[in-house]
Image 1: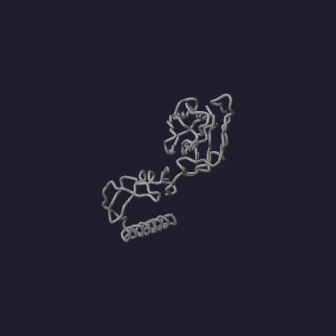
Image 2 (image 1 turned 120 degrees about the horizontal axis):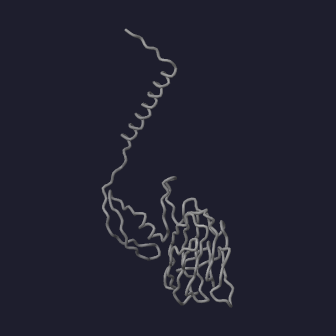
Amino acid sequence: MDTYRMGKWGNAIVSSIMVGGIICLCVWGWNKLNPPKEVTAQYTTVGIMLPNGHKVVAEVTKGDGKIFIPQDTLSEILGKNIQWNKNDETLYIGQIPNALIMSQEIGKPYQTEPIWSLYNPQISIDSTMTMGSKEFNLGYSFKNVANAEFALNGNYQKLKATLGIQDNTCANEGILEVYLDKQLYKTFELSPKSLPEDILLEVKGANQMSFVFKNFDEQAVINLADVYIR
């Protein structure tokens, strides 16, 4: 009968196989003891009463004696953008993962133009803003501004903000146009009767971002609150 001898590399391979086998066995055993829970659920439309008395009619999922609220529905209820970050398995509410406060990162625009030549353009940073009777304390307020330009220098990918008109400052509707590198990217119609809205701009690779304000009167104050950029 032939006899085979194993050197140190052979012993190492066998040891690796044994360790790997033990790890696989442990994982298999854990999964057997703690299998992923499966729930049979169905979508249904329900009314959700909020603490302020406002009622939201939205789609939820019911199953296993529980109610599961989809991300979009939760965003509507809270009035905030919600984003799931799979890298750190965290649900971000009202901000972008790893985002920076734009007013602190970039500051004021490097160039502005007034709507009315008799008045200087006024831009406030991180002042108290009131939209829909709700106060915000982070972001930009624009008054008598026709155009405001920010230097992004290709360093950012996304911008998140809450956009609206300051309460009791404007009597007519207006338009905000967003330009990236002189190309029209997105248009927002603003009305004094409208509640503020959360916006998300894809600015990847853009060197310059411009806000162009049209049809607003000289008393109108346009707010970009809770502005985060990354």
